[in-house]
Length: 418
Ligand code: ASP
Ligand code: MG
Image 1 (cartoon, rainbow, N blue to C red):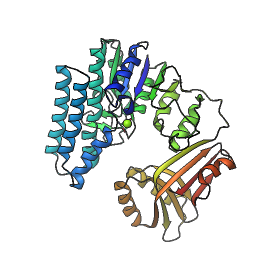
Image 2: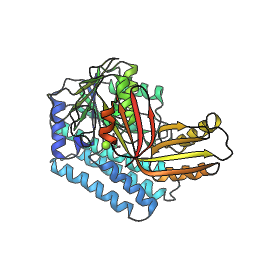
Image 3: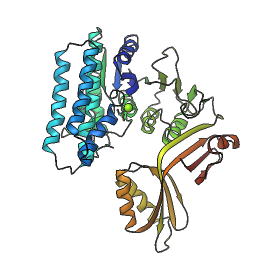
C-alpha cells in the first residue's frame, strides 16, 4: 500500500485535477490518496470565520462565493453526478445551519473548524467524481469519521488507537482499487469537525501511511523536491536528492514550507520513505527522505520564517528566568496555541520568537503582562542556516540588524528586522 498526497496547488483548477487524474491512473495500486482544499480555499474560508467575528463583511455572502466557485469547477469538468451535487449541497447546508445555530461567537476555534473543514470535503468529492468519471475504481471516504481527534480545535490531537482501528478497517476493505480522502481535517467522537493545523494534509498522509504500514508516502508538489532554500527567495536554490528524517524534521520545524513538521515522526517510526516530488514533472523522482545519512551533508540550507514577533519577558522581581518562570511562560504559549520558534534565556529574562498570528498573540501578551514586564518587536523574521559558513551568513543577512542570534556547531538562527 502507498499513500499519495496532493496539495492545494495540485487541485487548483480543472486542468490541475485532470493532471493528477493522469498521475493516479498510471500508478500501481493499492493506494490511498489524500487531497487538500482547492488552491487558496482555506484562506478564503478563514476569511469567512473572521468576517463573523470582525463584523465587517457578510460571512454568508463570502461563503456562498466560495461554494459557487466549486460549482463552476464541476461545470467546467463537465461532471453530471447527482451524488456529488447532493454531497456538496448537504455539506454547505450543514455549515449554514451550524452558523445560524451558533451565532453567539463564543468559540472562535470551534467555529473555524466547522467552516474551514468544508474546503477539503468539497475538493475531495469533486476530485473523486472526476476520477470515477474517468473510469477509475475510486472510493471517496469522509475522513472525519475515521480520523478521530480530541476537541483541541484548530490544532486537534489524533486519538491514536481509535483512529488506527478505523483506518485499517476502512482502507483495507478492498472495496475499490484506491481510496480518496481529505487531509488536514478530522472529527471528534461526537461528530464535530476538527482541523490539525494549517498545511496539515502532509501530516494526515503520514499518519495513514504509519497506520497502514505503507511501503512509501509521496507528497506531490509544484516544486521539483526539497530545495536548500525557497527558490522564490534565493534563485540559486538546489534540489536535495536525499535527506535524512532528522534533517527533514529540523528543516521543516525551522520553517521550510515544503512539508509540515509533524509529517516526519509517523514515517520515521515505521521507517517509511517519504518522496517529495513534482506533479508537473512526473519523470523526476524529486527528494527521498529515509535513513540516517545523506549526500548533501555540507550544503548550506537556508530557511526563512516570516511574520514573526520577538517578545522579551522580564521578571519584575529579579527572580531568575530559568526554572519556574521559563516553564510557566512556555506553557502559556502552548495554552494560547502560539508556536515558540526560538527561545533564549538570560538571568532574569526570556526572549521568544513566535509566529505572529495577530489575534492569539495579543491575548497572550496581555496575560503575560499580569506578571512580567513585556516588550516586543513585530515585523521581524527568523533566518536559519544549517551547515552555515561565513559566506552563507553574509549572503542572507549582510548589513541587516540582528536582534537575537543562536549558534550551534552546525546551525545558526537569527531574528532580523524584515
Ligand atoms: N488546506 C489546508 C491548508 O491550506 C491544509 C493543507 O493544505 O495541507 O492549510
Ligand atoms: Mg493548502
